[in-house]
Amino acid sequence: MQLLKKTVMLITGLWLFGMFISCKSSNPVNPKVPVKTQLEGTWTGTNMNGTDQTLYTYKMAVDSIFVSADSNEMYHGTFTLDTVALPAQITILITKSDSASYVGKTIPAIYVLSGNVLEITANNPGSSRPTSFDSGEILKLFLQE
Image (tube, rainbow, N blue to C red; front, top):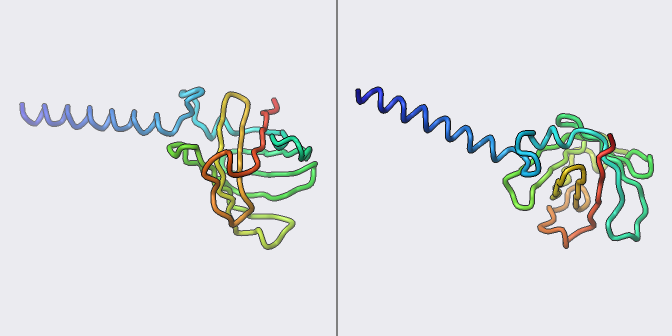
C-alpha cells in the first residue's frame, strides 16, 4: 500500500512539474500556442521613434531568422528565446551578413509579443542586451499574413 501511495505521489508530482514547465514556455497572449510558433512568419515595421523611416522585415521560421532593411539584406541567423525573463529575451546568432565582422556574433535583444504586434529592441551585434525598452531604439513590427 505504501508503494502504491509513493508511486501515485511521484506521478502526480511529475505531472504538475510538466504542467509548470509547459506554462513557462508559452505566450500569455495565447497560452495554447508556443511562442516560437507564434513568431513564425514575416514581420514588417519601422522604428517607433519616428525619425527613421527604414522598413525592417524579419522573416522567422522554426529557429532561423532573416533580417532586411528597405529590402537590403542585413543578416541571416538562428535565434533562441527566453520567455521566463522579464522582459522576454531573444538572442540572434548571425551566420551570414554583408558585414563580415558580424558573422558569429550575437544580437541580444528584448521583445514583447501582443497578438500580431512584435516590439523588439536591440543594440549592435556583439553588444550587451538592453535592460528595458527605454534603453534602445524600438522596432514595432506587424505580422504579415
